[in-house]
Image (tube, rainbow, N blue to C red):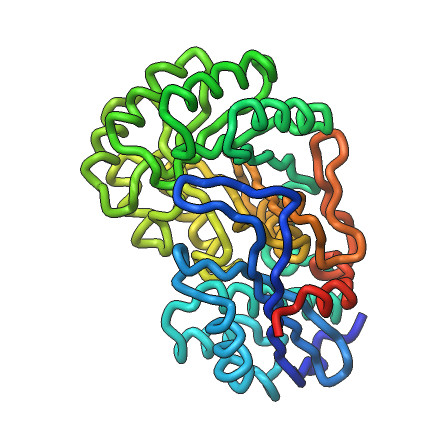
Length: 373
């Protein structure tokens, strides 16, 4: 481990766009994903230490394309960082924030790589640099988005056998009657001890949401995520006033002001994502605001990021005092990962380990093979 008083000067900041295939398509209310386009950030210090970061390009969520992210990171953010001391992470990120509005995915990937770099320099796990662990593992949920009831049921049974005890159903993809039937059958297949929630991805209106909730009451759905488009505040307040099921906000939350607004609308919890909030520091702040407002938390990656971003999500979830609604890691949906040893699930749990930084070893061959040139 290097002495803390010695500077850690940044030599280079690089961004790579990759197109990664999924094992099979994931169907959501307004989109079907077969491949994903993510941006990988590599920061190297003058003395040879390297840190990695990642964020999915998500035009519908953050307004960022991979082309814009690569251009912004290499053409604008890199000059703000090169030649500066990485130890001064807070002031460095504030310096970047003072020169850039939005670009939350790009900033998140850069901050992630910066923390990973510090972890390698000082031989400390990522979690120890962002607050210290409350737990040494997470219990990931599995997303069911196959587009058909039978495929989802088969997938759920298989993943339940692999140790998963929490499932999120992608709603808004079939008729409401089909989704009701699928939820009821899912509860019968998985038993009473498994957690089930539904993510409508803004695919419902108030009538559909109420019908789904009423008809699936016996299935004990834990919460409904983002039932309506973010601008439909009236439906959100009406559903919350029913008091029939907790509501989780995802696409409606991009900053602290959004959390306060959702709280006044009766929302019970928030999905925290690094790329929409702007990084680890912003996510930790958001988590503290949720706690102050009595709101529950799910910590989630964007579909589908590699084990680079999933590792950061695990470390973040290990630091937040309470993540009652679970953790969503999305690297298992990829047909190919960008690390040599993808994060594993054993007996329903993924353990952080004690390796420095994110604890991952990037597969340079895969990074080169799937890079968008």
